[in-house]
Image (cartoon, rainbow, N blue to C red; front, side, top):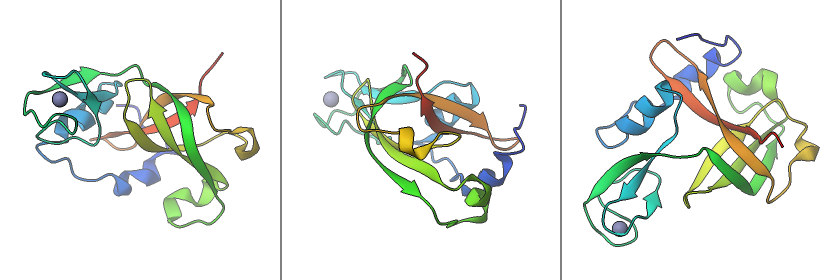
Length: 143
Ligand SMILES: [Zn+2]
């Protein structure tokens, strides 16, 4: 995997995958965003769980998501809460309403924070942060 050196400092923030979350993390390494989908009611969900949040079924499958969504809410971070983010402030952390339904938290870098708005279309941005792992961010959707 090619590691963008500007993303490498973020590697230490990546959690160790669990047996439940491992398909999500492996998906990122394949440059795809994967969500769980219920085999009974077809609802997508995140974070991963052993059962469906909607109907309780344990018929859980993994599906590739579009990566598209819209900004549901956001904040602009001006403080370097971790050294890995020091060179990125100010940056945006957004709750993204994915097109498949779940909401997901993610950072949006390399954008003027004043250009972000509720309802703005965004797209998953998957960056390799270490030899073992890629991570999920978001970026403004190209029109
Ligand atoms: Zn269900």
